[in-house]
Amino acid sequence: MTDFLNALVVLANFVLIPGVAYGSQLALGALGVTLIFAVLRFTNIAHGDTMAFGAMITIFVTWALQAAGVSIAPLPTALLGLPVGIAATAALVYGTDRLIYRFYRQQKVAPVMLLIVSIGIMFIMNGLVRFIIGPDDQRFADGERFIISARDFKVMTGLDEGLAIRTTQGLTVVTAVLVVAALFWFLNRTRMGKSMRAYSDNEDLALLSGINPEKVVAVTWLIVAALATIAGVLYGLDKSFKPFTYFQLLLPVFAAAIVGGLGSPLGAIAGGFVIAFSEVTITYAFKKVLEYLLPEALEPSGLVQLMATDYKFAVSFAILVIVLLIKPTGLFGGKA
Amino acid sequence: MTDTTAAPPSPAASGSAPFLLGDAMTGGYGSADILHGCTLAVEKGEIAVIVGPNGAGKSTAMKAVFGMLNLRRGQVLLDGQDITRLSPQDRVRLGMGFVPQTHNIFTSMTVEENLEMGAFIRTDDYSGTMAQVYDLFPILRDKRHQAAGELSGGQRQQVAVGRALMTQPKVLMLDEPTAGVSPIVMDELFDRIIEVARTGISILMVEQNARQALEIADKGYVLVQGANRYTDTGAALLADPDVRKSFLGG
Image (tube, rainbow over all chains, first blue to last red; front, side, top):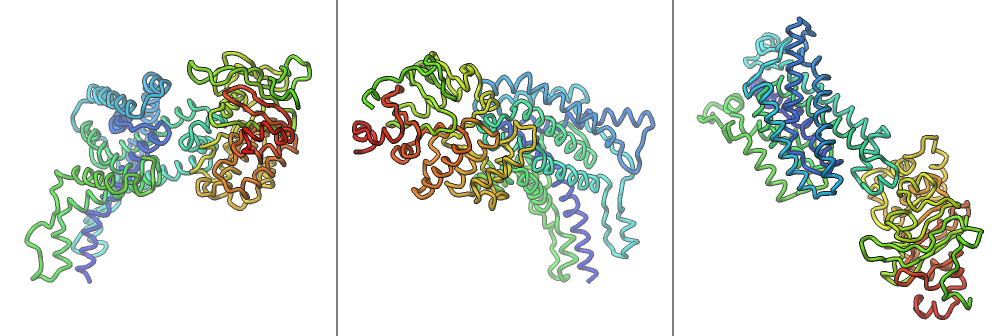
């Protein structure tokens, strides 16, 4: 019995909790991608770097606040910087839309053109972030490190294995739940949210109904900026901030959005968790869990790790390919 | 009935202008004209039906009245006001409702949300109008929380008409409302359209089912190659041997 509980704790500590936290971050990122796809009808390659930009601004504000001695311990100071980060990112993406995307939208170009335009914007944002904050790792997490530390857990339960829940992990999940609830309330209950869905569903009929497309587009960018910044900051708090990592995040974020079905908000959330848990379980070494569960004679000598963590991006890529081959519209029947 | 083959005299010049008038409209989508001096008029509370062979420019004529293509010549008057240069959106605000032939509902949204979006430009309380739409199409009340895309063809058309009615239009324009629905559903839709007209709303409608449409029409327009060929009351057109032979299959 104790062995079983120990195995469960190990699994929770190394797979379940990190998976839920990472899944929430991917879900928030994928929601941004899926909203852009639903309303503006293109795939925004610059989304990873939008997350990096939002996180960067938040980091600067956090550092300034830390220098000024402001603290909301046990919570990380970055939460106070978040609104500024969101505002700056909203200004950036909306400015980009006015300067660049709107021009192409008025030309009524094919979605693939906008995708290529967004690749250009990705390079600019990419350079901008590295130019301002540099390519190195930045740490900005402060406040209480753990909700439950491994040692406390062992003392509490008397088990051999410890279960640690970091503050950033708890914060990630709570924030993600709040943000998603607010987003769904907005999309399903408010006039503006419904008009966004209507515009996404049938552009011509939305215009006939008197819905102002420029307003829909502006609100969409605002929401996407908020989602991207929150996702970026949560990821940075949980791991660390490095511009290149955010660029790499693009792949799992896109995989999540596509697995769920591009254009479907519910799908983006489900997709985020599918990708996160696939990545974590496939790259986790199950040796310790099995040692607790199996009789001594059957204990594995290897690590029982399907794939080295270096290959974690291959997981999202493989899932992406499988979904596109078997069910291109994704789990929740998106548009692509 | 003897002079039905001649082009109708321009009602704009004759003094008592009809409620909605597309007068001597000439134009098309590109450089080539599709409409050649086509004239359409609807009186208040009447049903006008546009029929004609495929490619006659029926839908184009209606879109021209609604401002969806540029006219090179001619004008469109609504209640005496020249609206030729207004965008379709502005025409909706002036009291014109338009039901496109396809893609005329928000498939991923519920029936009720479709009606709400129809009333998007209204800032007043539209619950009364919604109740009227539900009274007109009772089945929609039962299905109001269901996604419109899950409904049958006839029910979808009811949603489409209901959406357009939410702005309380003075003129309702329908582009082939019975396309792809069964004959029974078609009869029912026509009954509902008559009911709408009885409330004082003018109806301008393009129809493939020419015979049935002319039966309910106060006025019928037979278009051929973008120009008026016959114009008369629906009953007179149905009785006209030339119209019967050429357009109604005998």
